[in-house]
Image (cartoon, rainbow, N blue to C red; front, side, top):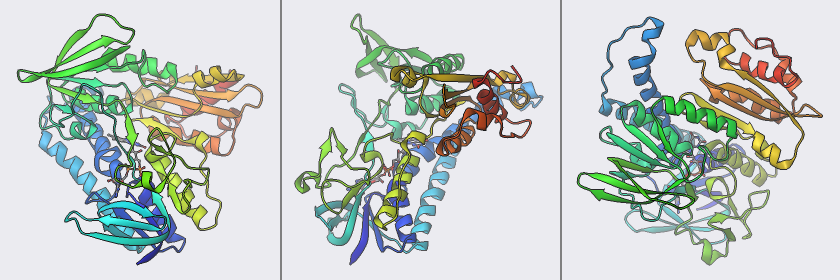
Length: 465
Ligand SMILES: Cc1cc2nc3c(=O)[nH]c(=O)nc-3n(C[C@H](O)[C@H](O)[C@H](O)COP(=O)(O)OP(=O)(O)OC[C@H]3O[C@@H](n4cnc5c(N)ncnc54)[C@H](O)[C@@H]3O)c2cc1C
C-alpha cells in the first residue's frame, strides 16, 4: 500500500498531523506501537494526571474547603480504586475518541513498532514479530519522549516510580519524595499530598519551576508550603536504596557539603523527559541529531529528503498543544499551504492548586535581554468573584514593551489560571497592547477582570487596587 503520508507515533503531534493531512485530501497511515492511540499525553500524561488532580482537589475541598461556605459534608473517605477507575475511564474515553476520529477521516491505523528502512519506506514490526513494509511520499517522526533517568536511582514503577507509576499507586504513601520541582513533580506531588502523603521535593536548582517567572516560582513555593509541601532546594539526590520495607534517599547540597538521608515509602523521579527515537533506524538513515533531539528546519524537514519530525522529539517546549500545532502546520506545508507555529505565543500551564499559567517572556527573560518593559500586576484578593469563591490566592502579571505597549508576556497564579491565560495568548497572536486588553469589556464578576486590571496597571490605571 502506498500512502501520501505515514506518521510514526499517535501522540498529540502525530494524530493531529494525520487528521489535518486527511482533511486536506491525503491518504494517511499512522504507525503506533502502543495498543491505544493518543500517545504519552492521553495514556500516561496530560489526561490521567488531570483526572487525578481534579478528583484529589474535590477530596481536599470536601475535607477543608466547603465548611467555610456553609456546606457541611463530614470527613470525606477516600475510595482510591474508584478514583483510579475515574482516571482509567477518562483515558479510555479519550483514546477511543482518537480511534473514532481516525475512522471518520479514513486514516489507517497500524499497530506495531515502526522503523524507517529508507526514505519513503517504513517497516512495521507487530507484537508477534511479523513485519510489513509501508510506502509513502512523506514520513513524519512523531515518536515523542520518555522519562529522563537519574544515575543511582533504579525506577521499578512500584516504590521508585516515574510519572507513569505515580499515576497508578495502589495505596497512598505515608511519605513521598519527589525528585525535581518541575511541572510533573509538583502536579503529581499535589495529588498524593492531597490524598494524605507527606511530600518532600528535592530540587537541584535554588528555585522551583525553573524557566518560569521567578516571582511566580516564589509565590507558588509559599502556597505549596502552606499546603504541607517541604522543599530541599539546591540539593541533588545522589542515590536511593531500599531499606527494610521503605526507601532511603541520600541528598547532597548542589554546591557540595554534608549528605543527608531522607526516608520515604515512594520516590517519584520527575527530573524531565528526553526525546525518544529508539529503534527508528535514524542513525543508519543519516538523520541529523543534536543531543538526542531530531534536527529540523522551519518547515519541520530533517536533512533526509521526505522525512519530517514534530512534537517532543524536536526542539522547543515538551507540550501537547505545541506538538498539535506543529502537526497541523506540517500537514498544511505538505499540502502546499503556509502552515506555521508562533513559538512566542505558546501557553504553559501547571495544574497545581492554584493553577499557574504563562505565555511569552518572563520578567527574568526581559531583564536578561536588557529590554525596556513595564509591569502591571493585580492580586486576586481584590477581585470580587475570587472572594465569593474563596479563591483569592495569586495574581496576574502583564509585561508590556515600554515604548510600544505591545504585550510581551503574561503570568497568572490563581484558580482557573489555565483558562484565564487564553485571552492573553489571543492578544499576543494579534500583536495586541496592554491598552487593548485594558479597554476590552470583561464580564463582572469574573476572575478574568483581574487580567483586565493587570493590563490597566501597566499604565498605573487599575481601578480596584
Ligand atoms: C505525567 C505527564 C503529564 C503531562 N501533562 C501535560 C499537560 O498537562 N499539558 C501538556 O501540554 N503536556 C503535558 N505533558 C507532556 C505531553 O504529554 C507531551 O508533550 C506530548 O505527549 C508530546 O506529544 P508527541 O506527539 O510529541 O509524543 P507522545 O505523546 O510521546 O507520543 C509518541 C507516540 O509514539 C509512539 N512511538 C514511539 N516510537 C515508536 C515507533 N518506533 N513506532 C511506533 N510508535 C512509536 C509512542 O508509543 C507514543 O504513543 C505531560 C507529560 C507527562 C508525562
